[in-house]
Image (cartoon, rainbow, N blue to C red):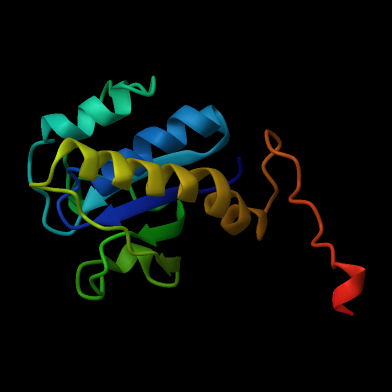
Length: 157
């Protein structure tokens, strides 16, 4: 995709950011470098996270709950914070000046399987609709056509 990577951030790196990492790999393959981390990593992934990914054919291979200190963050160009918490104080100096987008997605942890599905669906929309827009600011994704221009209804003019 380009020079850098996208980092998805949430609190525990067990549900939301893990889903975002897996869904980005699923939809964008090698075109988008992606990683995920938690500000307070849980250390394990609830089975519901894996179930809702696998039920739509998304690979869960290699996913694990991890903290920022476990990642090589030098290549990160975009941080997407899904937690609703202010990440200041959690982000290392390596990410200073990196573009940060705060996009809250409800945490399904401890909820029903349907709650996990709703979160997965919200994140899949973000990964397929919003992420390409955010990345297009630097370089368009070749796998997706450019978004169509908005058209106006002549009767509304």
